[in-house]
Structures are given as structure tokens and as C-alpha cells.
Image (cartoon, rainbow, N blue to C red; front, side):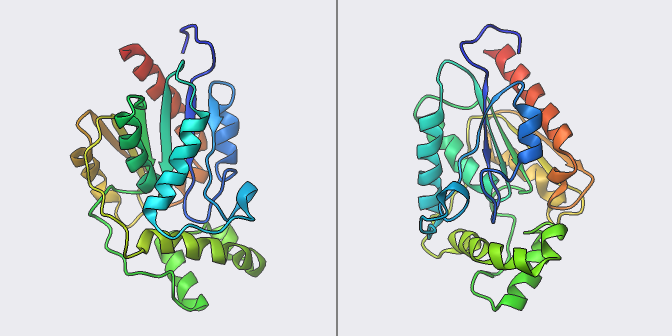
Length: 241
């Protein structure tokens, strides 16, 4: 990243279910010396706590896309990173940005094996005990949060809303190929980790996939690794342009 630019390159971090703009705090701290870090967030949490939750995936993509376009500085290259729900939504955001002639240099999805792999039954409407049992099995919350009832009280409505928007029957299936190169990462203890090569079917460009130690929230112990991956991808992207 030695090229002279008017601003630092940008990286957009898309949060997971139950998350907000501060969900990647340690990763943000590692990236900020090198990037303009942008952290869009959905309504009903963080700085948007007073706003109503969204009901379906299309609305969530549209909401995040407005934030990405507003923050985007076209004078510099950028990447999109999304974990879990953020990876699901980020895939569609990449296509929309490509269609507006401002494609990201790379898409980095983590904690998600790509479309048409996961086949989990809906959980958003389950009673509390069953709901959190399923959330734990799906890796939807870190073990630290699961130990405190007060934190579960706080996160329950956000998690129900996020799982609900992903499970909504009105969602339009999305399985299109993007032109953006993909670098996908999953934790080896995740249920669908061995399906990670599925991402090769959803980009027309190169696709690299890695499996690292950890569960669905491997990102919390591997933020230095992720920061280095993002820096390497940006260097590669800028060398191609």
C-alpha cells in the first residue's frame, strides 16, 4: 500500500447476527493505521437503537448499501468483509456495487460457506430456552455472552430480529456469481467448514478458501490473522489495478 492516494484505502466491515458497528473492535484497531475502516450497521442496535428492526433480507441489503455508498470514496480502492450474516448480505452488496461500476477489490466472507449449503430450520420464533439452545449450536453467540443472563436479555431481541430477517418467507433467493475475487475463511469446528469450497461457484474471478482453528467465532481469537489477510488482499488488488 505504498501508492500515493488522497486517502487511505477503505475496508467495509459487515457485522454478524446480533452484532453492531463495534462488533469487530479488535480487528478495527489492527486495521485503522492502514485503512479507513467503515462499519455500517442495521437498525435496532448501536447508534441506531431507536430505529425499528428490518423484516427481510432485501431490506437489510438495501439499508447497508445506502451506508456503503454514502461512505465510499471512489478515489481509493476498497474491500468488503462480512462475517456470517454479514457475509450473506455482503455477497449481494458486492453485486450491487459491481453493477454501479464501483466493484470492490476483494470480498472476504467468513463464517459462511456460501449459498445453498446451510439447511437449518427457522429458529427466530422459538421459546427462549429452545431459541438459545439453537443459537449456541449454530454458534450465533460467543461463549462469553452465553454465560450471562443480563447479556442474553439484551441480545435476544436483536438476535431474533436478525435470524428472522434471514428466515423470512418473502426473501428472494440469491445465488448469483459476482465478478469480485473471493477469499473465504471458516473455523474448522464450524458445521459447514468442509463446504467452504462452495464459494468457487459464486465468483467468476479467483477464489481462495482457508480453514483455521476455532469455531464460528474464530474471528475473536484471530483478528491479527484477519487484519494481515485484509492487508495482503489490498496489496494484491492495488498491484492488479
